[in-house]
Each structure stands twice: as structure tokens, then as C-alpha cells.
Image (cartoon, rainbow, N blue to C red):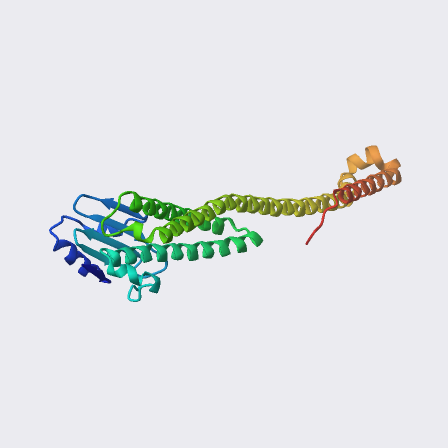
Length: 282
């Protein structure tokens, strides 16, 4: 007997009617695919992406199979119609289609994350990279859990799920899940590459800022030297005792010396500025 439910309260009632002490709420909060195989029942939980009811719970006990899922299972694939007539055929098909739909859902999530990473290749923002990395690691963990679940379902031979009757399709599902997992793992390394790009971008921006500051400081230094000429002259001739005692007879030489040294400082500053090959803007 198979019951497909879409309401959590109905699920609780059905499980409690079997006189099994199972609390459904903590199970639905588990974020990774897993299977609990006991002597009296088998419990399978598989999380989903981007659906309001984002959990698939399959409960198998004796001759009763309870399925709590947002997946529409009304129209079973035509190629499995012959299997429906066999014992446990319907439950086998339904569980298989849930697994297959979950894998497809994980593929769509991978493509969404990959598109984000493609955009980050052009503009590597560190916060966005870390967020994409977090989502990718979560997807990788879920895909690993799904693969482990697929392997365990075959090894433990759950009565309501006859893998021998869908051997080829189940092997294809196994292969596709392994492929999805490898794609996820390969893109985990791509996150490291994006982090490096982000650091390089930050270093370039920092270097550009330092160059602009160097231009400003060089300009201010030259200006300060030029401004010092009248300041120095004013300081000397503003003190009569100093100017009369030492510079009265050499006023022209003093001014000429100050002008020449200032001009030399400006020239050397300009040559230094040119040697840096700095740009004041993009």
C-alpha cells in the first residue's frame, strides 16, 4: 500500500498509526540526504532546492509505503508501466523517480551557482565569492549524500525498492550522480581561483591609490620648496640684526643662491616625478 502526502500533519498521523515512536520534525530539519534502515522500517530523507516544501521523506514499513514529497508523481513514466504489475513495482518506480528528480534539481542548483561564478570571473567581489563558495560546498555535501544514499539503497536491498527490476536505469542514475559530484568538486577549486583574482584586484586598486598619493605628495613637496623662497627671504630680512650683520653686503648673492637652489630642487623633483612614470587617472 502506498500513500503520497503533501501535508506534514497527515504524515505525522500516518506514521503514528503504525505505533512507531518516530518524531518527524527533527528528521525534516536535517539538511543532507540520509537513510535509516531498521528491522521494522526504512526511512529516507532527501532535501530539495527552491521549493516551498523542500523535503522528500520516504517511509517504508512492512507492506506500507508513505511518501511526503512536493514532486508530482501522478503520471509515472510510460517505460515503467510493465513494472507496475510486479510486486513492489509502484513503490520502486516512485522512489526511483524521486531520486532522479532530486538529482535534476541539484543540477539546476549547480548551473545557478556556476552562472554566478561566471559573473564573478569578470568582477571578483570577495563577499559574493564567499557566498557562492558556501552554497557550492552545501550542494557538494548534498550530492555526496545523494550518491551515498543511492549506493546504500542497492546494498541494503530495501524490500519496497527493487533495484534489480530497474538495474540499467539505476546504474545510469548512479553514474549521473557521480558526474554531478565531480562537477561540484571541480568548481570548489574554482572558488580558490576567484579568491586569488579578488586579491589581485584589491592589490591593484591599492597600488593605484598609492601611486596617486605619491603624485600628490611629490607635487606638494615641490610646491613647498617654491613657497620656501619668499619665506626664507622674509625670515632673513625680517630680522635686522641678522641681515645687517651677515647679509647686508651680499643681498644679491643670497637671493640668487636661494633662487638657484630652489630652481634646482624643482628641476630634480620634476625629473624624479617623470622617472616614476605615474598616472594621475585611468
